[in-house]
Image 1: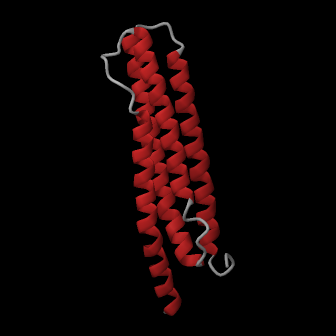
Image 2 (image 1 turned 90 degrees about the horizontal axis):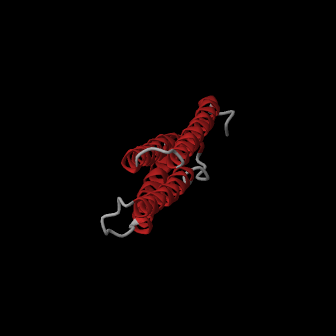
Image 3 (image 1 turned 135 degrees about the vertical axis):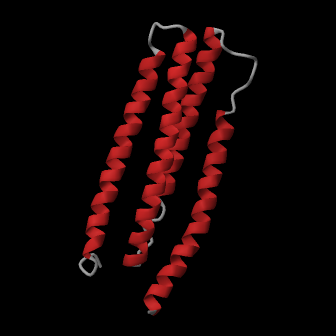
Amino acid sequence: MIERFPELRTMKKILVVLIVTGFLLSTSLTVFFFYALSQKLPAAEIQGYLMKSTAYLLNTGIVVALLMLVLTNIMCIKSQKRNGLLLPYLWFIVHAFLYGFLQEQIFHFRKQTGLWAGEFSLSFFIVLIYTLIALLIYLLNRPIVLWISKKQISK
């Protein structure tokens, strides 16, 4: 099928580059998070670094997942294969779990350093909400891609 559509080979290469780039960004942001956690700075300053790195991590996960979604949708429509549709959602769910884990670390850091204001951790609910949103998008996207590819076949 790839021989019929040479642009699919290019799209696969772009997808691999996107995944590798996203993985490297996510890894470096996670390393920065734990590096900031180990610094001997005022607790409020460390908390600011932790919050920034988790926000950038979440944004990276969302942007890469959306770009992967566009690429996999185009690839699935052109090749009539559905095996790539799950990839962006798995990427996003893994990032949601990583984000939730790092938010839990921030919560414990705040408790240990006295920055805690009596709130409780919602990390589990954040991961659950992001996972449900990703599932909803997947359940809406799959029939649309199937419908478009069936229209492509009928032409």
